[in-house]
Amino acid sequence: MKLGILSRAPRSYSTQRLRTAALDRGHQVKVLNTLRFAIDLSGEEPDLQFRGRQLSDYDAVLPRIGNSITYFGTAVVRQFEQMDVYTPNTANGIGNSRDKLRASQILSRHNIGMPATTFVWDRADVIPAIERVGGAPVVIKLLEGTQGIGVILAPTLKVAEAIIETLQSTRQQVLIQRFVKESRGRDIRALVVGDRVVAAMRRVAQGDEFRSNVHRGGTVERVDLDPAYEQVAVRAAQIMGLKVAGVDMLEGDDGPLVMEVNSSPGLEGIEMATKLDVAGAIIDYIDNQVAFPQIDVRERLSVSTGYGVAEIVVHGDADLVGKTLGESGLRDLDITVLTLHRGTTVIANPFNRHVLEPDDRLLCFGKLEEMRSMIPARPKRRARIKKLPKQPLPIDS
Ligand SMILES: Nc1ncnc2c1ncn2[C@@H]1O[C@H](COP(=O)(O)OP(=O)(O)O)[C@@H](O)[C@H]1O
Ligand SMILES: [Mg+2]
Image (tube, rainbow, N blue to C red; front, side):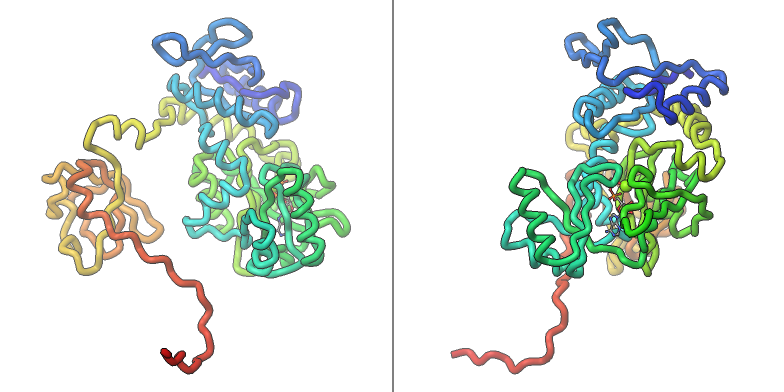
């Protein structure tokens, strides 16, 4: 294949390793400075120029977009997507993972452990927010920090409040997060490629530092990951839309707590710690997937007027329970079932003979009008109010 590595650091360890791994495998590879592209929307088809000249044909790109150029960098990646060039990490995935709040919001519905996190605007809401996540000491994070910069441990409510006020006065938005003490300055970095963890390491903070980033002096050691950690890392990366990702997890009392998902994980620390060929695994994965450029399913399918994608839930008392997919009558209503979700398992392209069970979720493509009546009513929010001690009912006056 012909691969373009989008990077502004041609001499960095990671870029060099990826380039060499591609060459060793007989691929053509070029390191392309992300900032030298011109996005060209003037012709009939989406196009790209590089250093002022028409870009040659590429089969795949591997984006290594730094934090300081997220907007332009993701625009370039999005343009490659429009040109049907394969990328393991989509522009959406990179954008979503870059913002710690956005990433946590997206992960929060998927039953993935995360440190309790909250985000507020008004000064009056700061103290209650800190208390909601467990009180001081509390972690305060800039939304787009990296390498540990912008992650602060505030020892008391007063200090936390002062830090947040100061940052907000300079128009910086911050997350408030429970300090996961039990992790004791250590965390896990899992390198996800496709649907598996290819390497993992534990990072240990130095001295009384609580941040374990290598850039903050953290040391690294290889670690054999518990399957629970592997599974969470892979799911977190997939939900973010990233096929190459470094997933950072704290070791909580009840298992992994995902802190962030990095779309351009550094390779030096993890290859040194594990002696594994992570760069090679990334290149092999891309080579395998190159025939399948990313397609935004919703966008493509909704072009057919009146048709769309929806999720239908099989209710316990509904007439679908106990029937096979074939007997369900969905096909006659012009509805195709793309996947069947049952608990944590997913059956892709399910056969007609699958018998439906209560709580099965069917991802369907079909006539919106027909699907409308089958879409479950929006569930009521679960009240999170703690049970109050029994009190006499107030007397109506
Ligand atoms: N809620 C937390 N509790 C305990 N330690 C944390 C917490 N959040 C971050 N850390 C420590 O700080 C480091 C940096 O935090 P992280 O959110 O990954 O920011 P960055 O993007 O700067 O790496 C983590 O690797 C971890 O060691
Ligand atoms: Mg981190």
